[in-house]
Structures are given as C-alpha cells and as structure tokens.
View 1 (cartoon, rainbow, N blue to C red):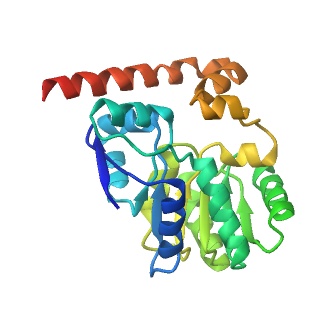
View 2: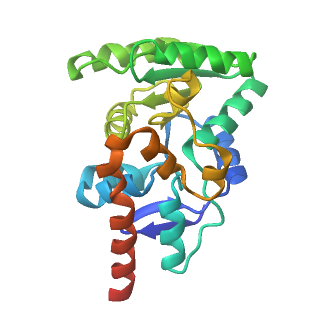
View 3: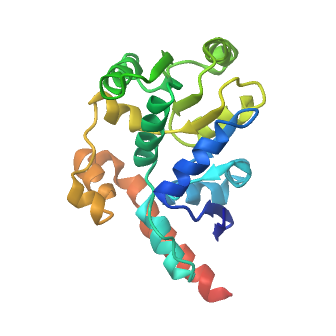
Length: 242
C-alpha cells in the first residue's frame, strides 16, 4: 500500500475495497495486526504526542477516516481516492467475518453498550461469532485481567472503543500478548451500533459533514471540532514552507 505523509503521520492511500482486502490478509497472518482509523483530530494529537505518532506510523493499516484528511491530501497534491470511515470499514469487516464464520470481541463504552451492539450485529450477521464483550470502565490495574479475558476468547477481530488515544495505546501496549488476529480502535462506533447514538444521515455522510451532525447532536463537542480548521491551516502552512 502507498502511504501519504500528513504532518508526519502516515496514512494509507486505500479505497474501501482495498482496505477490506488488506484486512483479509491481516487476519490470515501470524500475530495480532493493528489497524488505526485516524481523523484530523487524532492526527493533530499525534503531532504533539510522539508515542501516538509512533503507534500510528508503525500500524499495519492506517485508514483515512475523516473529511479533513481528504482535504489535506488535496492541499499537499496527493489526493486520496476516497474517504474510508471507521464505521464503514467495520461494517465491511463484519460482513466478511460473517461469511467465514469469524469471531469478534467488543471492548469498551459504557456498561451494557457492548452487549447491545453485539446483539444488533448478530441480528444483521447471524453467522458472526461474538466471542465476548466487556465495558470500558476499568482501570490500569485491571488491564491484565481484561487482556486475559480476550485471550481466553481468542477472537479473530478485537474492536476497542475506549476513545483515542487510549484505545490505540492500550492495543499497542499488549499487541505482542494479544491472541486476536487483528485489533482496531473504533471510538464511538459501538454507541452507534447499540443505538445509543445516531449516525449522520446519508446527506451529511456524502458531503463530509458528519462532524456538523455530531456537533448538532452533542454541542459540548465544539472545542474538539475546532481541531478540523486548525488541522487544515497547519497543513496549508506546512505545504507553503516547503
């Protein structure tokens, strides 16, 4: 896969179809492969957090989630062919795992949410195996026990919804120990699957305005939304310095 450098963060230039094909190869490989779906907010955080930047740049696949990355790629003259949102990629991965009777473990969000999400997934994908679920309300001292729980379940795909960068850092910390074939940080996707949070209507998706819909749903996110214009300006000024 070709990689695009955005502010020192490497992003794979993949389409949705290519991302799925890569996923198929990753879960057929030895060890636990790491998949990351950064948006502009995560990239901005990674420019200041060396550990997060290293985690992203060392990942086995980095999917361009977020319209900000599409805009940035155009600014630097290496346009991404399409945006591949984390939740759309997850849908494709679940569909494939359903076909091969693969398994997942859902970790994170509030108590009960992972179970609800698992039920919805099972309704849509009856041949998908739910190897386990666990909420995200645990401390650092409980991590070893949580990892053991996951390893006992031996899922094909571990989906971690602890928010960024916590989810990426936890997966990286235990990557060598994990018995899952692949792991991904999925942020708020479990809440969407569980019906706790509505995904933006298709109009907002098609025009890259999901951030606006989330802001309408959750006005308290306005400070986080400021990362998008700041990110675009930083990319623009970095390009002009070259």
